[in-house]
Amino acid sequence: MKGATVEIEEFDAVLVGGGVMSATLATLLGELEPGWRIAVVERLDEAGLESSGAWNNAGTGHAGLCEFNYTPRRADGSVDVSRAVEIGAQFAASQVFWAHLVSTGRIGPPQDFIRPVPHLGFGRGPDGVAHLRARWEALRGHPLFADTEFSDDRAVLATWLPLMFGDRPDDGPVAVTRSRQGTDVDFGVLTRQLLAAVRSRGGDVRLGHEVTALDRVDGAWSVGVREQATGVEHRLRTPYVFVGAGGGTLPLLQKARVPEVRRYGAFPISGRFLRTANPDLVAAHRGKVYGHAAPGAPSISVPHLDHRTVDGREYLLFGPFAAFSPRFLRTGRRTDLLRAVRPGNLPVLAASARDNRSLMAYLVRQIAQTPRGRLDALRTFVPHLQADDWELVPAGQRVQVLKMSGGRGAMVGFGTEVVTSAGGSLAALLGASPGASTAAATMVDVLAAGFPDRMAQWAPRLEEIAPSAARAERPDPAELLARARAARRVLGLDGATGDRREDPA
Ligand SMILES: Cc1cc2nc3c(=O)[nH]c(=O)nc-3n(C[C@H](O)[C@H](O)[C@H](O)COP(=O)(O)OP(=O)(O)OC[C@H]3O[C@@H](n4cnc5c(N)ncnc54)[C@H](O)[C@@H]3O)c2cc1C
Image: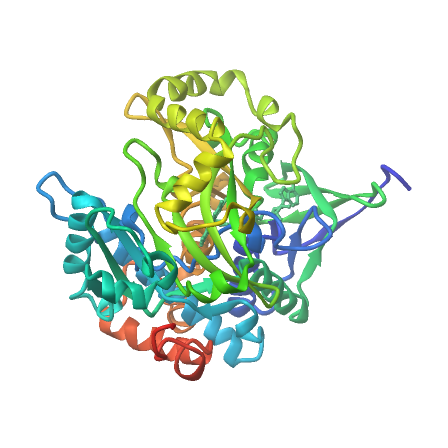
């Protein structure tokens, strides 16, 4: 049977990849068009195991509550908070969407994928403290950020974060902001719950199937799929394809000769974290604490110390530390990087190497970092530590997309970019940040790009299930807060399980 082609199957939409993005899009389409035949094709035997897998990302429900990189400082010392507000609204949309699915019995239980964990910003040194204070002052008037507290009193900080401040030597000015709205999310579990819901609606979720070709035939897409276990080839015909294949997206678009990405290059950066499950340490740090990046370092390098719960067990995670692997997926091939080099993208590869010297220097420093260097970085958060408590674990691959911008080679992978082709009949997601947290809003953008004629018809339902900050009719902040609060109750994030409780001892 190996290599034999079976008959062509017809679908209304084919989604490539079984990560959180495709799972979200398939669920949205199921809500909007229950009669559509939808296929989700995933090369691995289980969904949500690449970037969306729990240990391949930090599990932060990014809502702009604590990340310095979403609130850059202007030359006059003030802070631009527009990105933090946008991400806060996008995460609220994700929460409203998940709560809708929980309350209608489509997914759950929610505590398997989302838990309340305070988000804290950590400023060090005069500049860091000034940045944090300016960030807090600029955001606290906004309803989504109104509960955020600020303190530079070490006695207070020791009650908020005993592991970091309980016995901290005097190492200069420090300050912390705390929001109890923060969350820890297992995006792998969420992905699998979403895809179970897609299946229960009659969707076709094919695990262990790799998409090998995308061809435009007679005004439709012909999707070549290989069954991994048997080698049997399938052909799916559809008017609409979404490529949410993570690191596999660009190679697939290149293979399909999608003109919009002809000049795009790609560069993989893998990550690593230090992790501990020591119960004493875990008990002394209930929070996700984000510091600021070193000068010249990219935003993905922002150090953070996170409380995580994975498969019912609690951990602390610190990082990320950048590393290099030529693979585009954790489970990819060593030849991925080489195979993505084409005559069309050689100029952008050369220009990106030329124009991103500080990033390259940062990566070289990270790759050369010793175990002692990594522990020294951790000591800026946890001054007293035992090396034996911490192990180095691999994280997911980020494939940074390279393209020309303003005559320079630019890495666009630090944002998320929706690429469309063939009149919107193909959409693809490139880039990774802020990623999974904003899946609902990002997938509404994907729908708008692919189905402009249907958006007016879909808008009322979308407004109900996933109010998107990206749409023209931006929701009123106070109304969004009320909806986010209601969603938090459904998701079990407030009250007994959540953020009203006393400070950890
Ligand atoms: C180190 C790190 C830390 C991060 N931290 C956070 C965080 O704290 N919070 C946050 O919100 N986001 C975070 N992110 C980003 C987040 O993980 C990603 O944005 C998100 O998981 C991307 O989901 P996806 O569905 O696009 O990709 P993936 O989860 O990678 O899914 C793509 C799927 O496509 C499959 N696939 C690939 N090629 C094919 C093919 N040809 N045929 C069929 N299937 C294919 C893959 O096997 C995979 O399952 C982090 C990312 C990294 C790398």
